[in-house]
Length: 329
Length: 167
Image 1 (cartoon, rainbow over the protein chains, first blue to last red):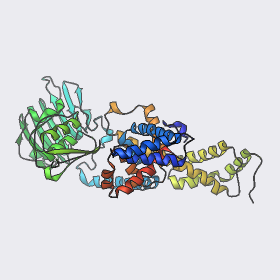
Image 2: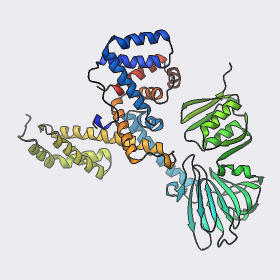
Image 3: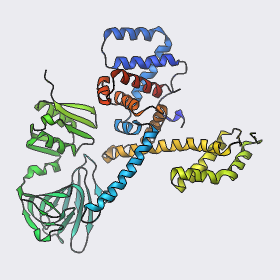
């Protein structure tokens, strides 16, 4: 690997090790301190020798180049020396083995559907709309995956993970739509409904029309859910019927609507749409949030929170954010 | 006694016919994969040929394994960094994933930085990355790594010097 392949120049050859080390030490000392006396000392050092000046300017340019690197990749790639990395690799392999064994115990189909084979999947923060034949519209929420199939009896959608909105509004529909999930299946001929899968359970919400919900292991427990109703179901059965409204479908339009929502619940919801870690200090978890927030700009949502609640947003990196109580002044 | 042949090519020819099979199985044990081992054994001989230097045949296997070991380290560095890259773009919307040229340039840069940071410890590297990539105040870095401010400053200076002023 020769240095000529890299984006940076090599350091000037006429800079001694001593001068380069001093340049680095000055940079580190000056970064966090606005001390005038220190700056004067640095200025004196800089002008004392042309070699100092060369070292300093090269270092400044290098730092600027480094700043162009995407932080998440660089953190992941550079955080450990090679030996650690090999250990990590082994741990990862062992971890993968654990998942494969554990998964056999989980699903009623033996193994969960492999998400990497999905026909359509979204990344964290991504939402897509798909138009399927016969006037069937599918909205796929963040970090979700589906397979689309057709057979003699049904147009079938497999919800592998995440959240899906299905809109079936064609009166001339030739076959019913069936959505298969980890907890069971849902049929409709006419309706607009959402399904959200998490940890073996699925929340179904109906906004228009009606759906039939059939838990995988309890076929006699099937129910019909009407517009305005919502239910959680697992493979073993269906929970109590609750209510829903169009506000619960706001994600389709890229919004998060909160009504007197706990802050920790709100942040958990927001973090589905945002890569990295979004943590909430327990002292403020029970604060209430209301409002309409844009899902595509979670940084702005955090700013809005910091203005409307007694909280401050602590950003360690773009991928690691903690919401804390605002310090007393 | 070390025996040096007149031309490196002759020496390499001998080296190849006598020890190529041994090198391949030595690499296979380390890499766990026949194809990778064969590729790297090939690369090892290409590397030796391209050096065009006299080849000592006194300890041919030690010599071969030293060259192969260097290539193996480069390869594992490259794979580790490629994996980190793939892990990190897994979160990105498709439109934001860098194109192949940017990707190649980025990987080359990361591999070179990693080589320059060499054997510096995880703590030293992290202190430097938090300082340089995230712009974190040094006291915050010290708190997070659970070490003194002086230690953090020493770590950052070491890593930054290694990174920007490689020996």
